[in-house]
Length: 481
Image (cartoon, rainbow, N blue to C red; front, top):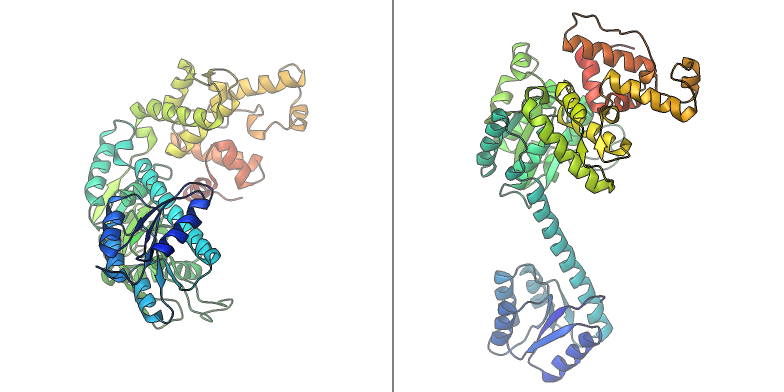
């Protein structure tokens, strides 16, 4: 054992107490002893111990009673029972009451040492898990809300009230507005916080695989079903399942989802056993579900089951006053992560941040700030580090030309050979003067995709958004290669 642990030994035999105490003292542990059940239970309740070695046969109080008292007050404290030869049934009862394990007299000291090491390792993992869950509760807390937008404030106040219940929640908003963060916050501030949070991206899988992913399947249910598969609803038992992009779920799966919401029951694909789960459902979508219902693409009854609590997160372009707050928040986070000495945004950079329309919302803003922190070599982020406008593009070209030892008017072919991204090369303005922001966004995305031969990863990187956002935009604008 690499660090000092405190171990309580409860045994009525003085010789046994002494032998076990010396064993753990030699391993660097602190030990305390009790000669009977009453004293042992009092010591376990009042002291701070990492492990208890408990004899089954004790005066004044039986080992099983002591075990029950310990588990009532300190359920995570591991207890190893010491039993007499032939008392296996009693040992099994002790395991049922929560003992970590048991060892039968006579035993080798190495055997007890090995068992204690395993018990202490389990205790360490429990403590680490509790710490991590505490950190998650702090990270996903309603007091971490950023900005002053009244619609967002209203959504978080409603979410805070909903968190204390088991109500189903539907979160509406464009891609990148923070729907998943809000879903996790509801979970980690609820009474299900110690249970699992299971996310399902409903657009990531085709219809037949989505059903299997949600509800599981039995061996042989379909080709390649070589073993039973446990679905996400089973994995989320006593926790929360987050159904992202619920608006794109096909009709056949919608029917099964409705049953789970109504009855908490389902069958695995290819199975006949009805399973019952205790799961809270939080769903999110960037689609207009009311329009989808009018088009008969989304079930009315499923919508009303999902929207017991409905929250709407506005896009960043409608949160102008909050953009600077977000930017400074992300700046601090990435400076801390990278260790760079970037301190501030220039006035020109802040002007560009506020003027940009942020099609990728908060996620794109975060990406832009992260990129700026990486590119900035001084203390102040300038427009060329953000790379949001034609001015930034010109500055980037000048910097590239300077590194190449060339004049800014160097031939385009030379720049291409130097690895300058096509989006940074000079070209005629492709946007009509009377184009709307939506038209400009469509033209720009189409142009960047073309420049990168429809390599979506490369295009998404230039656009400052992730691939999922880019795929949604391709679908939204009906772009074709």
